Amino acid sequence: MSGRLIVFEGVEGGGKTTQLERSRQWLIDSGWLAFLQSNGWVQQLVVTREPGGTNLGQGLRQLLLHATQEPIQDRAELLLYAADRAQHVEGVLRPQLTQKNLILCDRYTDSTIAYQGYGRGLDQVLIEQLNQIATNGLQSDLTLWLDLDVKIGLARTHQRGKADRIEQADLNFHERVQQGFTALAQAHPHRIARINATQPEAAVFQEIQTTLSDRLTEWYGKKE
Image (cartoon, rainbow, N blue to C red; front, top):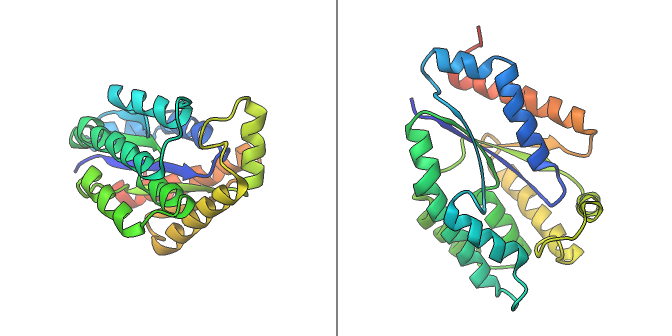
């Protein structure tokens, strides 16, 4: 049995990074990781992100989120994300999955569909083709979609300080992105689990914990 890829998705300010870290710690503290390791199903727990999960990706992330020299054109943005993903899949995700590792990843292919497809209005067929090229067919085993009103999310990002290039986009853009995530969740109900991210942080994590427990049990059996 190979490893599993669990992805955290959602609009800006949805709490992905925080909840991913809480999930990592819970997998250790709850005994799930030890249970999986003792049975030889999982070797290690790996945390990564897109963009920026490789050395090359870190440079691309800086360009994508903080470029100031000139505006990044929409198709160029799409191709930069695809390049980051291609490097990430072949350099990190596939090798880690082959080694039977459990991966927690901050963003993956659904973000490209939501942000560049729905948000930027680029051709969905083209995006699907690029995702296929970049991933060579690798999909998440589970995507946790933190569903949050975009106005609340953007208010949170503004409280954190200076907004990055994506966060600075107008409200209509972010609303279209949210429409994209909603459509994806409706189209892929088994792969994408909706998490109500309007709740307090602890309640959001409780919902994530329940979802993870159910899915891990489905994959590996009840934890002893």
